[in-house]
Length: 211
Image (cartoon, rainbow, N blue to C red; front, side, top):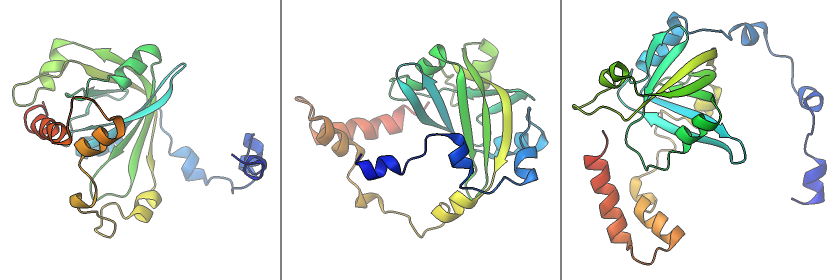
């Protein structure tokens, strides 16, 4: 970062606030301390949630969780259950939750530009009833992330409208990017794994290890 960039950065909230108008009353009042009927309905239609978590000494991480709409279940006005489906076994999100319970969630619905933001705390549960309720194709998740809701509010659609996320304008053909296997092998240069082997492993994993 050069000196010019350093002098152009902001270091306090007062300077930040001075650049923007005050938020409208509705933008403040829309923040709820629970999940109302509209939040519940949004979550029931959402097939994708992005989870933000933090671990002291390691920083912040975000990770997607996706499945059929309603896979994240609202248990009551203050609790959401999110199944942990098979992944890469890095366990970044779960390790963070064990160290620091604070999480932020962002729910998406395809075709809808607005999103739902939820902030709260999380814990990892292996309650048999929760695991059974989250089973797909006869397979239960290893655990469920239970989120205790502290605040929830609907987020306007400007960002997704600008991104034209649900339109075809910026859609990229898969062949326009290298395969995941190729990108990772070229990034890490493993001694005993070829691009073809990595691609075959990933494709098989997609077919057989979604649940």
